Length: 295
Image (cartoon, rainbow, N blue to C red; front, side):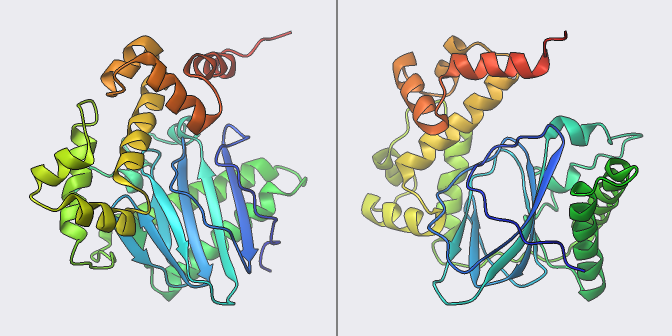
């Protein structure tokens, strides 16, 4: 029996320190902004008419498609407003939790590794594996919501089997399913440059000159393919990396310089606007999570 559909939540952070899984079905959703997570996401598309953008890569989703999204990847669903239900199962996995199951050289996060030569964000499994993965995710939801004996142990068992199955499919997946676009290579090169030079002074004028393209054309095509402006993407990418540096223990006064913000005031305003918390408050909250008080 399919897992019960849940009400869609707009938050983009986890409440649990392990994993969270949801089955959603919507007839209409407002536009979802380009965003990132601090956790791994496995997204199983069930129905609807949706294109999905992950960095510069665009995918037209088919039922049974699986998206793999790592913590540093900016992504966004894009809807066509037809009266067709949009249904999916979304699994969020905490980075430290998944590492507990990495043993004997078997890294269950490998399918998310953007540096792996065979990495792809989208897996399109055959009917047998599609049925298996859907069943595992449904069973995971059932056990997560159950209060029966050893339901947490059963849920972890389904989670590990799911991750092993997806990693196997990712390792042998021979196809890349990105939607080809004539401006794709140029925008991809611009994104790569931003990702490598985020700590330097960057602007639309500089990037247009670097890649010998009109800044107006670059602005239009970048927005069309990535889902946001060049300026906004630069800020978001810097913030993603800054958040990671803060999580790794680097002080905010060093982070803002390494991420290209120029001065601390600019960094503070951008961080507070994006995450609704100051850099120092974020560091304090991390320390509280990692060192909970005991009675």
